[in-house]
Image 1 (tube, one colour):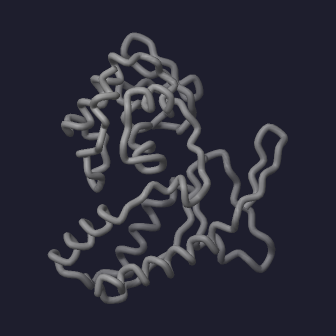
Image 2 (cartoon, helix red, strand yellow; image 1 turned 120 degrees about the vertical axis):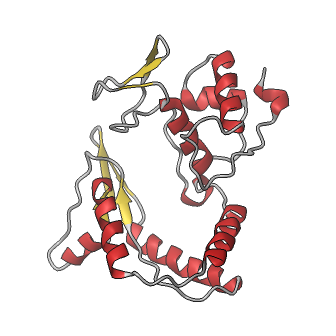
Length: 213
């Protein structure tokens, strides 16, 4: 995979190969907890709407595995129509969910990723947003959001770390108001915002002795 940004070209590992390796590792993980084998469908989702997916002649089938994020709902619907028989009981699904949460570790260390700091736009993913009178303003698409910071903090928990201090949040959001950060983190910890992903344990270790500085 190749990325060209501001005249500079970077080469990244083949995401399809990485995906296939993850499928193999997940199968092994399921087996280690005595879960029966299930269909695992590798899919590479490109989040940037500005990216182009180009394939060489003879490799057109790649389009079945590499898609833009806008097509993700369609792919999920296609899978749901094809796989209609439930292979796990409700109890097994609940057990699997708990095991996945317990085993989750931030992806940033595995992939060598460094998420770009700043509050990103929930509509077009551009960053950074500017804040004015309690609202986040996107210079790219013009959208306005009151909760964009929660979306970015959600990404932090997924990609960077499951613990967070006030200082960490200020640096990641590029927003240096410790009083407001304190309010936002308290809301997250108490589960008072719907932006927190439902599969994430919201009782994060916030290191309260540092968070409220």
